[in-house]
Length: 164
Image (cartoon, rainbow, N blue to C red; front, side, top):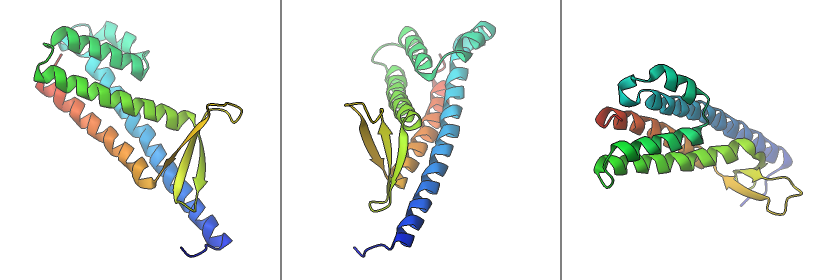
């Protein structure tokens, strides 16, 4: 690889930071849409017969609590082992994974590695022995946004096919 000049390295760093910031901003939009759609799924359980009371309850829940609540409805209303039960459980597992990843991305701090063309998410205080870091390419951050959009589409299909 050719050596980068200081100016080229700084330009690469700035461009990478701007692209990562754009993708992380889009991630917040996508995550909040998913969170809202999950909330709507929960308040419309049983055809919306408890819409008013559930709206108040669900609106105060974090995503983790909403996922637990949805899992309870899935287990109570859909036969274990059925395709619909499996489909909802698979969606819940994927959504929980992306929720955890989003939490790390939002609560970590960021650095840029212009040599490897990666952004680095660092979790934990520098004084923490268990501090860890995760490197991401721009494509990997974009893939998280793609997964968030995919989860939204899939939740819509699940609700349409097999309402709870």
